Image 1 (cartoon, helix red, strand yellow):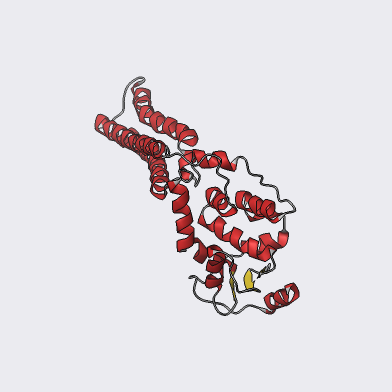
Image 2 (cartoon, one colour):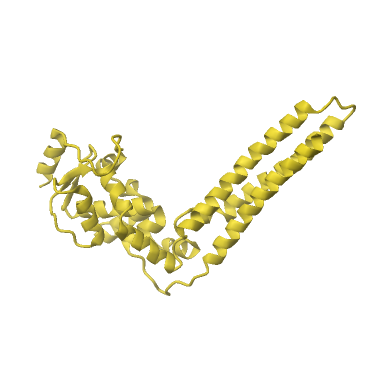
Length: 275
């Protein structure tokens, strides 16, 4: 019975580690697509590579707010000042807010992140070899999670073997424990290596994309591009604006992105003052 449980533990550990290795190797092969030499990332491209679709939505809204065409209240409401979008993403933001001119920032962000314009941006970056393909990112993440679960399964099997095994003389019990340490050592070492080798493939940017991001500053500057680049790379907190951080910190607890809630007096007052 002991050897049967041990064999099962080794099979579980070996299978999960093999799947992780295969996922990482496939991700490395898929990353070999060349990217244009001297390519300069746009603000939206930097946002996608740094934080994915939701970061792109945040940068689009912050850009409109900086140009006083959108009010982002600290209470979590977005109010349209200028209903004319200057690019596809800005038009997507305005469309997500709707005809009422006001909507929850969390809902707008979720709607923009799932829009075709953002998906097209991600597809272009993936084709250029700058972004990790969605299926690759999901496969590697799932494989890492599978190895973690396998470690727990090995521990459980070892404990069950310890409980069900008949009393053993001398150091036989220690020998049995040492046998189960082998598959546990395999999963632990695989996870340790994955922290270095597999971690890049669970993010948005490929190695080529990360190389371009390294040349961008995460510190806000005086001009619009430097300011927005900092938000794209470091997120909304990089703007060093407590009001802006508070605006994006609100979460929509009502579910859905198409239901427009009526703003409170504070939001209307904020919009009037901004205008």
